[in-house]
Image (cartoon, rainbow, N blue to C red; front, top):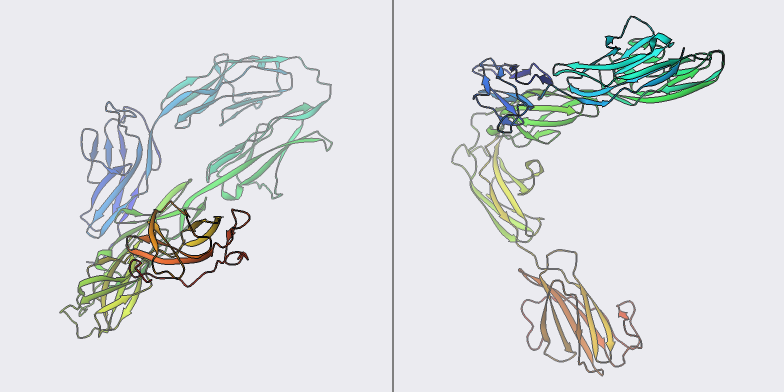
Length: 603
């Protein structure tokens, strides 16, 4: 049976649903039947019940869409369709479903006083799903949009140029979408008689705002200027590139509209109000950012690979912002941006999906890995055992299978730290004449996982069962030791734990008069104690002091110091280091001492 890749198409994008009304979501899956289709909301599988009905053609029916149900749940969320047949499972991109809503106006129109021949501007803003359409009324009647002096912008702005006395009145903003209709508060326009012959500097009343849009949307860059004589409004790009003419339109007396925007339209736009016949001008600027949803430059391709080899799926996407890539295996997510499968086994045969997504949108493509199994391959090794030999080495052994062993040319031992992901494993080749391997250069007190494959010239066996073992622990490294003279009969030993191998649980301190067989000690300290005063010393003698760190694996090497107390130093608090030996004291390092047992007489 040849593989026909499952392809899955969620026919809707983001959806606005009307509350208390039915909603149908459609999903189309192509592949070799039988194909089962399921739906998820926010990652959780839906089941047929009083709220949801799933049809064999992939359609999901929500009988009565509710933003908030009696039990506190909601029908809003991210929906995705799941299609599965004998070859594997694929997941659609997500479609966000939200209820149609309309909030209150958060920007109400304000009353305006302006002179004849001047400019009047009203604005209202309201949040809603879908985006509410805005219209305007004057004195309870719709504004005459045929009058060229009236400019209605989709952003909820009404501009009136060349004002006349008859333009005076009360203006109201009307918002409507599938959730309903709402009227704003009224705002009065009062037009007064102007002294038109008086010169007025050009001035920009409202300049362009910063906008972030997605490709194919429409950008409205507003520019309202006033002055006498009436200023001429022009547009340019700050980077000097031409704005172009395709898709460019001027609304009213100076607003710039760019339809079907693309990434090339991103930039800073400058509105200039110019006094006719002069170089007098005023400017304002706004930034337009156009984002592009993720799209594939190179989608993954279906591949076939023999058992034991490596498969690499390539997936490249572009968009603005740069898309993030995620892989699914039979619908299960991992967060790798690349997909490399080492040491392929039969369990790796599946459908793999690459999902590319950014803030502007997402897309997905799928490919299948077919695992080829050659006749005559050896059976997998068995009875894999691992035994710790030291803090840095583990011995792994196994038995060969009784199946097709005569053509075996060698083994490959797969190694990784148990906490690492599979792609972090490494391999060691092993001769066919041995069934064991000592793995070195390991970390102390660390768990490792091993498995083995047998190889012939035709390919590899299935991987053996895994074996896990931890390396032995390690004793602590020697601490640093410093001696401080307190007075003629007291010294202070100060030590610092080493940052090298082995965790420490505490310290042991020993001291004795030189040339005597018996040490005083051990004095045992917890790990947070790092100093101790040795008292009642004879100032005429030389003393030997030793400190070591210990843990559950035993005692570490000791650090030794010799100190003479024949004369007390004049100033207490001087640390006596090997490179700064006082003429009245003797302090020198000696070779590190490694105890194999506790100190005894004569040591």
